[in-house]
Length: 327
Image (cartoon, rainbow, N blue to C red; front, side, top):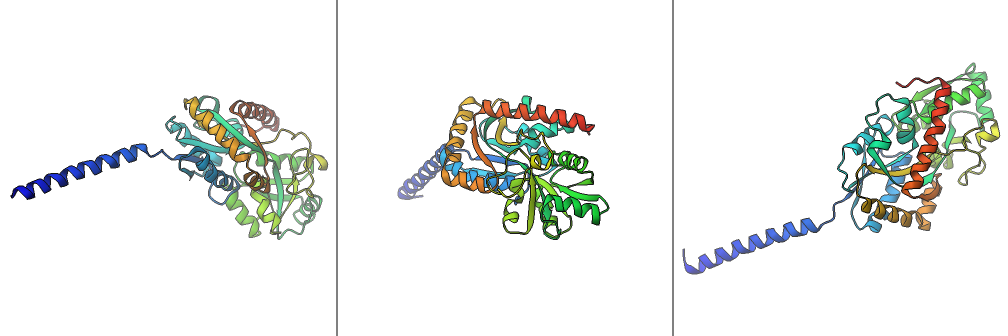
């Protein structure tokens, strides 16, 4: 080999080492993406909320943000994934009351203990559950639905719910008792498949979060005929509350929040809370979430924990009174 070829060869090898080193340096400098776990399939209300927030959170945090859907068992699978995730500030769980407050009360071994395995990061909204009727149902109001079940169904009816042993299931039971109907809950694997059957008139009614019904209610494809809580919703002021209809005791509203694995650094929790407060404070984001049926209001980690415990205690009493035995 000539001297020139030797020099060129050494130069090329040196350049290759330099490029490889730069590539490693760039890779190390790249921020790790933040994963937002969602316990329900794409197309449902919780998924829509996650995708609304993820883009703006990426800007506020300065890192890529990806939504990771882990549907099944009313969020139980996603919660177990969160428990097994590293507590390094790369994974959070966007969830509502069902997974955190209700499942541990109705499942003997859900595979996680919220107070032990998770840490509240921040909350951003409350909402109400709603009772909706399918487009093929002639009822235009809740009173008409009750009358329709009595006359057409002999007092018996099936009502879809997005998950078994959920708040909607207990609401169906309470509604049946209050209005003297034999209502049976029909559980689905999330709001999206329940909605598909309601739109196809395969089931006459459903109970779920108001954000699950909002789009199709506005489009006239189904009708929300009652909402829980003591106040009518800003997004559908014409719909009465169950409090107005005589079913009281549901002033404590379900919530939405973010959780991280226990042991997650406080620095990350603080940074995320500040970023979320900034994002939900933006008029465009607030308007989008409000249009979905949420009452937007930022909650610090401490405020989210307080709401979680109050809601859990309220439903512990309701579930115990119902006679339900954890499965």
